[in-house]
Amino acid sequence: MKQRYFSTFQLILLALFSALVIVAKIALRTPLQMSGHSGIFWMAIIIVGARVVPKLGASSIIGVTSGLLASFLGLGDFGALNTFLSYAMVGISSDLMLWILHGNTDNAVIAVIVGIFGHLGKFLTKWLFGIITGAPIGFVALGLLRAFLSYVIFGALGGLLGWLTLQALKRAGFFAYLAEKR
Amino acid sequence: MRVSQAGRSRQLALVEDSPLRHADPRTKLFLSLAVSLVVMTSIERLLIFLAVYVLFLLWARLMIPTLEHIWRLKWVLILLFLFDWWMINLDHAILICLRLILLTGVFALFFSTTNTRELGLALEKLRVPYRYAFSLSLAFQSLGLLDDEWRAIREAQSSRGALPNVSSFWKFITNVGDLISLTVPAIVLTTKRAWAITEASYARGFDSPHRVSYHSLSFTRLDFLLMTGTIILLILLFWR
Image 1 (cartoon, helix red, strand yellow):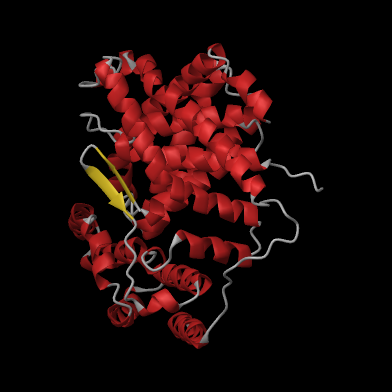
Image 2 (image 1 turned 60 degrees about the vertical axis):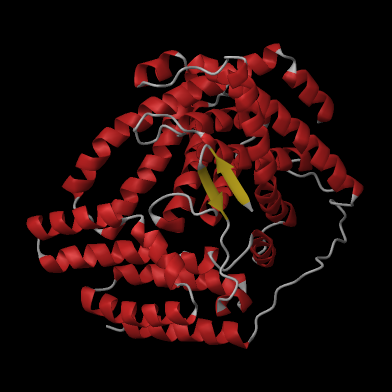
């Protein structure tokens, strides 16, 4: 039988992680009125996903699938195209960072860096959307400067939360359980 | 399909009575992408196109979902319009707002008239491997279950007093480690579910090399009409 890049289990796991990203996004209610604060959970899930399925493209699959789910559910204020691209970019930029750093998210520093740049992928989409529509750069920059800092902070926190989750899962014997299932 | 948490709910709202429900998802994807290209035209052509587009939306009974998308943007549109008018000129302000309105609403054509099963079939026809198309449908169908599980985890941890206090930004940052009380059980339960689904899929011959779909997509006269009409309109709009 042809050897597949992702096994069926891995593909199903990534699909469910994508659904978890959406559930976390809808569920997270904090009194913080800061843009990008929900990224803390979805970056954590992507960081965990990238470690549980340690292959290039795993984060991108989570991003693209969650982007399609979010578009179907009407999440986001700038329409389905923007929503899809934002979520997809989170996954793609996380994968890109993991590829550049040649590392895995077991390392706290790498997890935080991937969290920041992954989350900034979403920010970049919003910025590009503003540029494509021809909105004045000054207006966009002014509005997005605060958002940029917020995305960096919550991306880093998401990376950290993902790393902490991985350590807790490791202590609980999760990866031994996973090895049996593979 | 409904996902709801803490007073916020999201639902897949298909416009069942839209004539576009009978169109092939590939056609709708083509329409949405083609209409997105129109943002690159001048203000005069954009206005002409919008007049045609509004008539099309009325025919497709998609005016309300599209307006709902645009309504969410009202404050951004107002601010952008005023800012552009003040800084540049009225024409530019109108152009930017029209572009934003078009881009915001255009994919309602696709997402308000297509369900995930149809999208899966369309992806298969577009040569995306069946396993990936299947995983998309699976993710969508699992939303409700994961939502229930997430809610149960929250309630259980909340009753144990294990959820951190996130009433302020600093408390949120200093207590971020405590959020693993939510993420760890969610990841473990999701993995267990993934394994159960994998076993069920294998039992049903998921990886069979001779698999054929029960449903299949095919272009109808409506699809050809929509595609031809869109292409002609685009050629006219971009002509010189």
